[in-house]
Length: 253
Image (tube, rainbow, N blue to C red; front, side, top):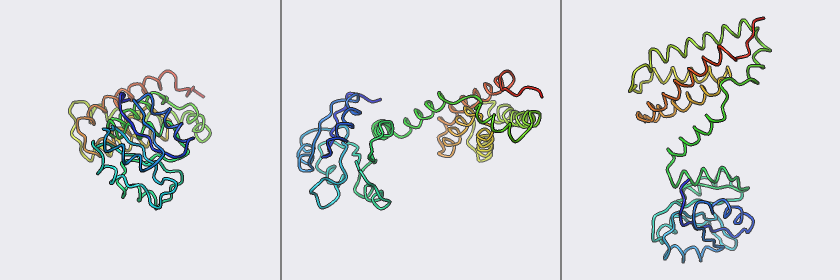
């Protein structure tokens, strides 16, 4: 998390303002406001690093314009809209008004933090963090998914299916990502996409998470990040294979 920021929080609802202020305090110094006029005056003299701004203040006839606030501001900084009831039409409104992101009520702390991180440190950094968080909580093999599969297939059939999946994994490791760097080509992205789908079906959570991340980076043509992510995918494959051999729970019938 980026800290030591100067943040302006403008919301005339005391409850949501207090909740947001507690979320923001670990990031830096928070200045609060309850009126659009005060916001316009403040941004002319203070260099804020981030502004959270109510989309519609009580008593105001129109939506708040982030473009206007940015034109008045001493410093260029992200401005996030705060909205209590957002219709499909309002989603486009906040974008047209120049906001960088949206926070909806009721306030959900994790979503707020991710939105702020996206603005302050970049969407790529947020994507990396989300991946690591998902990977940390993912199981090598989901026991609940394995239990469900056992309702529809015999142990011997499941072993055959998992063995076929392991062959798919080994081919990817041995033939496609054995040497680095790996060029981003449609063929390898198709293989990773197929592996992702099969991993999801079979409850190989870490493999699914790693493959999803690799495919996303490849589709964005981020070659350096894509190659780095392949190390996680390869490790997930090796971990899955070792776990499957020892602890998968597929005992002989």
